[in-house]
Image (cartoon, rainbow, N blue to C red; front, side, top):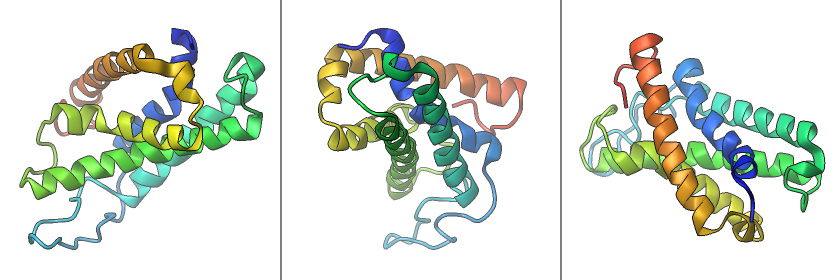
Length: 177
C-alpha cells in the first residue's frame, strides 16, 4: 500500500490537468457550438480546445518530472516510460471526467458554472483513476479503499480552496466552485 506522499505523487497529473484550463483555457469550443438531441449545447462555452490540451500537456509534464525526479522511490513497479504513460492517462482521464461532468450537467439543463459536488469536484478524479487502473490494475493494490477515501477528501478540499483563490484573489474564475 502506498503512503500519502506516493498517493499524492500518483494523482498530481490529474489535479494539475484539472486546474490548468482555468488559466490557460479559451479559444475554440470543444463542441463547436453544436447542440445535442435535447437541443442543449453538448458541453457549453466553458469547455475549450486550449483548456483540454493545456490540461493534458501540463498534467503529463508534471508526471514526467515526478518520474524523473523520484526514480524508483515513486511507483517502483513501473519503468520511467510507464510512469509517463500513466501520467498521460491520468491527465487525459481528468479532462475526460471534466467533459463528462459538463455533458451530464447540460443534459440536466444546468448551465456552465452551476454547482455540483460530484460532477464539478470529484468526477474528474474518479474517471482519471478508472482509466489509469484499467491500464495498470496492480495500482489498486497500492491505492486501496483507504487511498481512494484520502484522495476523495483531499481532492474536494483542494478544489474548494483553489477555486476560492481563483475566483476571489486571482479573478480568473467566474464562480467560486
